[in-house]
Length: 192
Image (tube, rainbow, N blue to C red; front, side):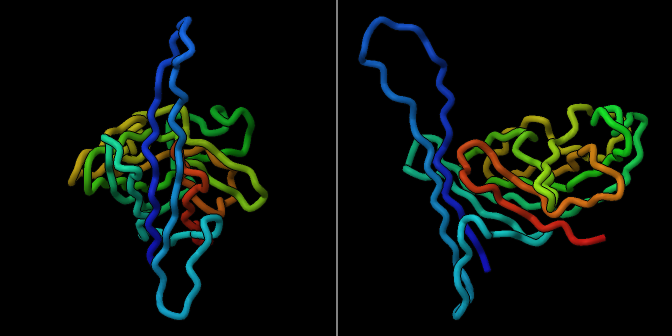
């Protein structure tokens, strides 16, 4: 089963003060999700689409704007219990935390696409979510996923994104939710 999502490009416009009333409204962002499924099976709904590690999620811009792009995002793996000179418990603000990473890959097949590591979170079955580490230590697993990146046509960005996680508690999934995407894309973390 393959799912392709269409994402309207997000435009960030600076606000300026003006005395005229002819200011244009900010552009809206729309997301359209289409799914191709095998014969005889139902297409997944936007809220229930999940992927296995290594299975790419395809995306593209919509509405024919000047910054059209399309590509894929993939979670390749997850590892918990990574050692570092820095303390995961210290970053989390409480004891009992360890480092973990998600191995990620973002590729662009048309145009260019800019993103940052804040689009990623770990989701736990109790509803809690953990954001990526705000620290980067020299001994974090390499290559590291970029903090900010622009990927151009035919290129990819791949790396490991580190998270401070509760020791002995495994996330249910890795979520990708960039601005403009109404429903996060989800990869199920296999049980250890």
